[in-house]
Length: 409
Image 1 (cartoon, rainbow, N blue to C red):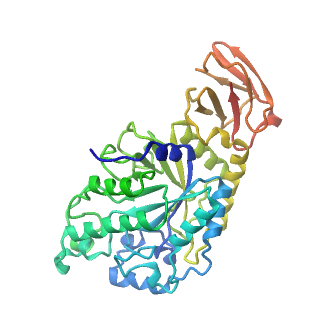
Image 2: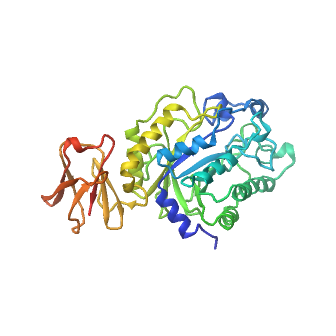
Image 3: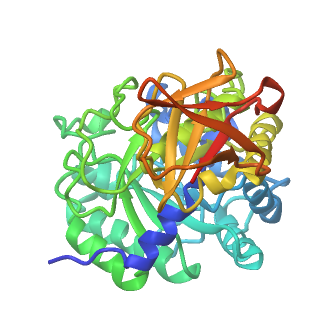
């Protein structure tokens, strides 16, 4: 039987509830998203020279970790290597890496050190299962390499990430989609065999017993992962088309973009409002899911100002209302059209996301509940039973513009 994350590691992760996703790499230079190599059919020999242009002179690991802390995020997950094959750390297994660029530094090492100094933010790694550049993944016929050579590379990189950067929060895998016929001219999807998950996951849990394994791209959500992931959707709402599997019994995580892109796009200005981001966070928490919110830094190493602003706005709300998010579990009070709930043991938190009057009607409230107050400052609220439901009165002047949280005891 394969190993799994330690109980204390999983408990910490679920208590954290909110993290920062970071998509950053050579694609940031082009500013057309992390899939630009595939979507524009850029041959490897034309894409690889981007490495000689990569020089993020404004990258500041301390500033990134401070931003995550200001946003109330408890962990960061950065792309150690995306599908384009460029490693964003000083791997010993490839020359196609950030330390061979003009930048010449290991940004993941700097982020790990900054996280260690701050203490309140842990580091995790996104790892692509596929590699559009590696000869053993895409060009086996020409290179004479075998699938086992690619597995040695993939598993070797995971071992590096689990042994070089201290205690990590998680490993986040991406790229195991349904197999397609192999086409050497456009082999973006089809690997040559299994990724040997049991061996891979056992290695992670041996080296990093407190780190959770998240695979958002596996057809079977019960194949050994510690969490089940959902992309651009809340669990059970398959509006994005990415999450066709059913919700499993595993703990959950939702990953989401601030605009419409993961990697930096210079033309994407469709930013979600701070209020809506808070709603996504609390709706995720209300079903027991973590919320991993993405930023797409520029090629210069800066997180776009509008994304940083949105994060800080969420953080300001959390400073007053974080007790209804951190350390909570899925709500016991049924959701309504305008409310969801979270819970910490016998204390219930009702998130009122829309107001049409001063009165909030709730159903399914435990009979033991005797009092209500505003979470942010303890202001008592009128609580009465009405037609079999609970009615809580929140005067207009007491409402929060993002989410007014009622604490029920």
